[in-house]
Image (cartoon, rainbow, N blue to C red):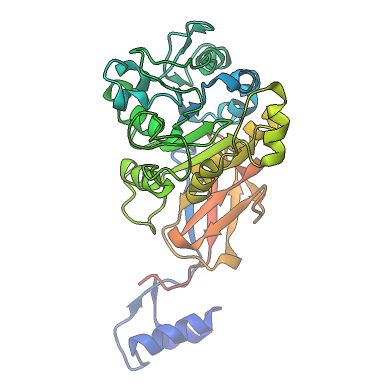
Length: 375
């Protein structure tokens, strides 16, 4: 907008902004050259021909298939609808796949090359034949139920190598699965990556096979740190620095404390609180759920957290936060971190939450006064 500051500058509503430009630019009323700038409210309209397309999401479930997990596998499968319904209603473009906590065996057992392949069920529970579930899958819930019921791991691997049922290594299993070229149909580089670990015993990812000198214990010197797997996911998803926006999260459903462990142990199996799983979730902004709370509530909470992380809108200008007004399909949305929007200064973006998450096809308008003047 062209403005003759000598005749109009002090008549504008936002006098302070004009004075600031004059002071910084050193332009006096004697100047015969007008400045090009705008002090009018700016706006970002997030619509593509009036249609909003939700972000892609790749969701990898890493499920414990040890002897004590049969009931938890069934609970997960039977309550999966609570997880998927929001993605369906918002018409997200998702990939969903399943790995087991013994997928790491591929790394140390050359006769078990298939353990890091995505799973489509188990011989004892039936196979779905579909390793990657997407929005076009005919029976999404039924397919996931088959894929997630992995059966239970015996005491020996396919080559006869001793693999104790309690030697859960979800972290290295996740890595082995993601790095296996045979699973390439799952991962899309422009999609948000959500890892969900379900286990009733903590992670003991480390070098080598189980032995008396390489046991599943916290004091094992070969135990790989949680941070090493945070670093792996940063590299895998292309996150260049800790300050850069993350394109992934790790959530978990595990044994949160000794009370939960004692409750579950009543069936005769021994469990272990998932301290490392919870540390991983906290480090990546994921959700922590308990095996001792209703699965439908936990799964709904995890899906909400993933939707929140993928409902992010960058702004082209830095706003004065108090002036932001957001409308979805013409309806004013409140500034609220439960069912509304929040502003994140670190990457100059709007985050939507809860019932205010835009549906597919929504028209979104974000109006605000900018902090600076656009020259």
